[in-house]
Amino acid sequence: MELFYLLVFGGLGVIVATLELSKNNKDRTTTSSAFNSFKNNYLLVYSLMMAGDWLQGPYVYYLYTTYGFGKRDIGHLFIAGFGSSMLFGTIVGSLADKHGRKRASITYCITYILSCITKHSPQYRILMIGRILGGIATSLLFSAFESWLVAEHNKRGFEQQWLSLTFSKAIFLGNGLIAILAGLFGNLLVGSLALGPVAPFDAASCFLAIGMAIILSSWTENYGDPSESKDLLTQFRGAALAISSDEKIALLGAIQSLFEGSMYTFVFLWTPALSPNDEEIPHGFIFATFMLASMLGSSFASRLMARGSIRVESYMQVVFMVSSASLMLPVITSVLVGPSSEKGGSISFAGCIELIGFCVFEGCVGLFWPSIMKMRSQYIPEESRSTIMNFFRIPLNIFVCIVLYNVDSFPISVMFGMCAVFLFIASMLQRRLLGVVERSWPLDKARELESEPLNI
Image 1 (cartoon, rainbow, N blue to C red):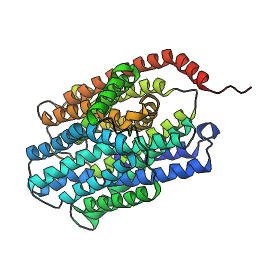
Image 2: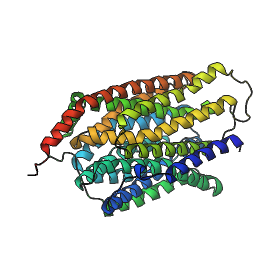
Image 3: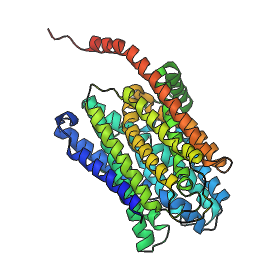
Image 4: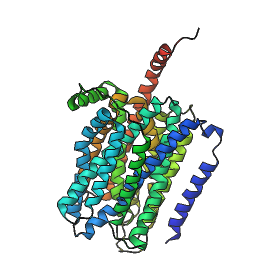
């Protein structure tokens, strides 16, 4: 392995370790033992859920190729997954609000386990069913668990500031450390132990089953609006009304869709961007490097959110601008560095520059997740939280399906340039959101003071 990869990985590892070990009292939040027990239980469950998800990711495309399917057929399978998430996401979100987030979390485990089981079949129809189930599970993963956490946190009377601590730790572990360990474990199963490309999916099922057992034994149920008089259509209307009547929620949904759409596009494009001429690159090691960069971002986020003087809405403008600039690097290198006609070999100089930029983008992803979670917990009404969160994913899934369908129609640099533009727009919308929040803050504070009992 080239020294360059080791230097990037080692440098990021040193920075993450230094940040975590150098935290002082200003960067730490004093909490209660009851909250720590609650937080650790959620982090354990969330880490198991993310392990089940991360174990599958690197091997889905590879598994389909071993069954003899071409790029077009595989593309249709992926589109089915995102399309399923778009079509069924709002429905399962509304059901989670009405019938309980704990039940929805258990449904996620069962649905994803069934999706993993379908990977044992080489039949295209069975694999398509698996992708549809996986799309439904993804909608539940990114709505039910967060909705349960926010409602349970508030129900138990914990301080609102402590919620940010759980968010940042969940991303640090679930989207960072667990992703790295899952990648290494998957490589052990498929490579070293030669158990075949289905082995990671079987391992994922085991982790999901363990997490489901913990949910069943330790979680209590909570709801959004459980009233029997409200059907799904009424819930949809209520969620749509909440989005249209509150500019903060509408802006937050647009920002989330723009950033996540660019992020998922990046997932599809980083490999051909770094190896345009079939250069030999260590995909697994680069993936681990990206996850380490994400851990660095979540570590920064925990420091920023621990300081009450810094508003999330303020620093996220900078995060979106930096992420936009980082995805412009492939455009810049395509202009300044001439394309090479030499096939194979090691990563090019342009590829090295792009890899560093991609690590910066992943650091922004690590900052984005806990920050957007905190803003959602503040602005989205509890009675329709899961429904609204899945509403946000509709434009995201449409965007990703369009990109997947046209991925061969445009040069990679053009696709990255488009993502950079979307991220710049997200920065402008974030600036608008900050203005709306600052204007409404005095009124919200006055209402809060009016609601407090007078101590005479």
